[in-house]
Image (cartoon, rainbow, N blue to C red; front, side, top):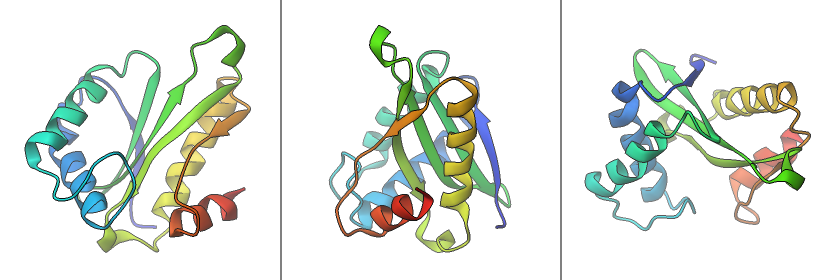
Length: 142
């Protein structure tokens, strides 16, 4: 793996451009992440700005960086309901097409798993397209 994985906070707006490019790369590759191609820079920015600004709430975001470039990300939405304090939702695990196959998605998911366990989240849920490379990855990781 040639990427550094780190959790980001609400003041780290310097990564927004890279996250926008990453989201566009995924959408243009056919990823089912809530957007349709072609994804404009404005739509990507409108998505990421409130996500980053709201990181002091129930969302946790990690980025994978290589040579100063954002090459991957994943989000963990912590369930705030009284009966859901044991679970969280994995969202938008994305890796640039040019950086796939290098263990970045696995490293991002390992960061999610470690954080979730440390915060009492014993059930992680997600959705993905059946038969997709993402489904294979999630099954492989257990």
